[in-house]
Amino acid sequence: MNKWLSARVALVAACMWVLFSATAFALPAMWLAHKGDIRIWLFGSVHLLPPGIEWRSEILESALQNADAVYFEAIVDLEDPGADAREAMGKYLVPSGSRLLDLLTPEERELVAWAAKEVGAPVSGLNIFRPWVAAEVLTTFLAARQGFDFAAGVDVTLQGEVSRNKLRAFETLADQFAFFDEIPDDQQIAYLLSTAKGIQKTPDALKAIVANWAAGKPEEIAHNVADDLGTGGSTDDILLHRRNARWLEELKTLLGEPGDTLVVVGAAHLAGDGSLLDLLEAEGLTIERVQ
Image 1 (cartoon, rainbow, N blue to C red):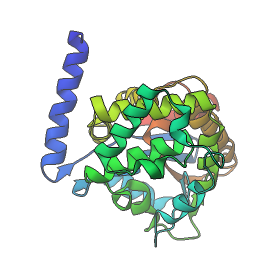
Image 2 (image 1 turned 180 degrees about the vertical axis):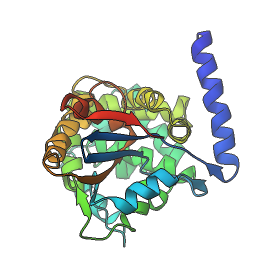
Image 3 (image 1 turned 30 degrees about the vertical axis):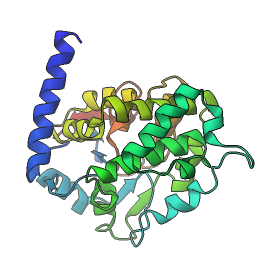
């Protein structure tokens, strides 16, 4: 490990200690994209959070109150946030008569089985799913074990406060799962193995993402997500870049009239090359970081 990487790890570890040892005050990154009287506020979210993090600022509150429309990636069933996910995931099973572990080498099977046991997920349950679903299940079980809660996440929290006439979504949860399923099988397996290895070698990776989010470090989040996916190539294109491009088309419909719009999407979509910010800037909007 080089000295720079060691320093980064030490810094993140220090942030994590502060963030997860007591009620913490976060200041996540936020931007304003504007052109004349057209203002689009963009706030990077984290979908799961531990309780006790204060992440709401005056700038965010003002944007939320004054927005003519508030866009999220997808609308969540607030009565049962996991209901749509459970229904959609039931569609993404391995072919009848086969098992997920049959797609892996003996060493890979051992790794995935170990990771499942480590986070408390039944291997028999994983065996029926496509590789990307199994990876998501492992991550969800790990997050729950570490105290993260979907109901405490940015999206669910804010969606509960936005009036129905202002609430907008770029896609549905079913759309999101379909995007994952577009990933080639070999890269799905790579994603699963990367997730299992992460549980083994860097079990605090999710905490690191939240620490960087809380500290307002979008570029570090881009590195975290790249490490988490562990595949690159078409996976990044499908899960990030293509979706950003689709969202841009929706936002372009707002450019004909003055007004305020708040966009709340996963922080990774606002970081790195090809981010939603880059695409808006290419459309002639001025981008300013406001937080």
